[in-house]
Image 1 (cartoon, protein in one colour):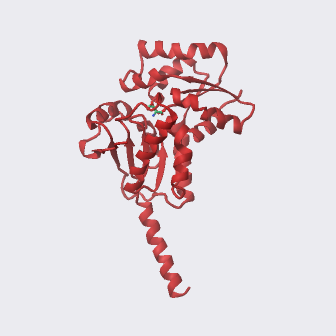
Image 2: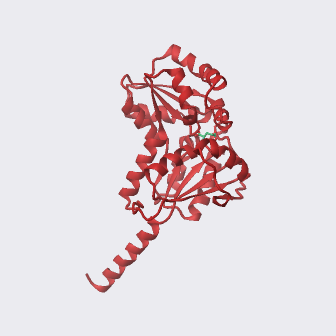
Image 3: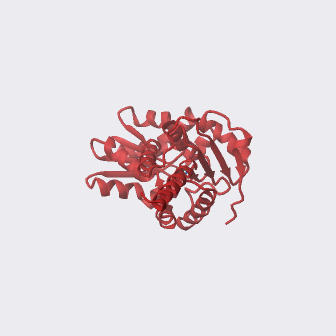
Length: 290
Ligand code: DGL
């Protein structure tokens, strides 16, 4: 190896290690992505994360496709500007409609949405090919789960149901009891009367909070798939592939949070989602004017 080749190789090694030390960006419309963050932290304990919750504009699930794409692109631009080595679109609604434009905008950045990993996990889990998807209205309208499931498993039948009230229940900490059960009955009973899904996808960041209630209504024989786990496995594989994984047990990774509305409200809801409180110093308000 001549001097120039040696120098270029050294520069490449230094650049790579700089990249490895960068955080992984996580985008969500608000607090729901914390369910994904929790899973990611368990699977990638030495990685740092930079979480963006667009709390001033949530919920995304009731908005139009154009608005969701616009907000998501603006927020992800901030994450990219801060310097992230990969981007996870934790929000199912944003993943359903905005992922192609983000991939086109940042072709060199590994970008993972939650829909494809969740769809693949559901196909693997289902024995009878009948899969139910619970999501926001925008995710159901976009039909992204259905499209991917049927592209990979043409015999599969997908039944989607928008469950917008589940979002409010999760944010109020109403995980179990009469109220969430009555609402889950209202959404799920008609679907279960008509179809026999053996697998159900939680196609919204908030729904894992209501797991016990949903499981109670659909019965123990129905397998519930949470896309967060499948997404975490996918990002780990991507980081290994790009030689970007931080797997040196130097110190436990940390997470910094960017929010577009009052950090106090984010902290309140985060307590339900993370089962721990977030200290003030990890939270930062960002001006995200569209
Ligand atoms: N994060 C959204 C999702 O996963 C749920 C909350 C919202 O509608 O903004 O679809």
